[in-house]
Structures are given as structure tokens and as C-alpha cells.
Image (cartoon, rainbow, N blue to C red):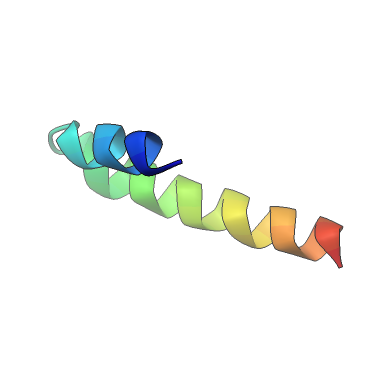
Length: 34
């Protein structure tokens, strides 16, 4: 998981968009988990 975050951070410009998508995905996953 850390590597994934590092990879997203490594991406230029798209890093912001990727992070946003990742945040949404995490939020969705948490909702499904509950």
C-alpha cells in the first residue's frame, strides 16, 4: 500500500487527480466494509 501511495506521488500533474480518485476509492471501500 505504501508503494502505491509513493507511485501516485511520483506521478507528475496527474498526481493530484490520482490522489483524488484514490481518496474516493478509499472512501467507497470503507463504506462497503461497513
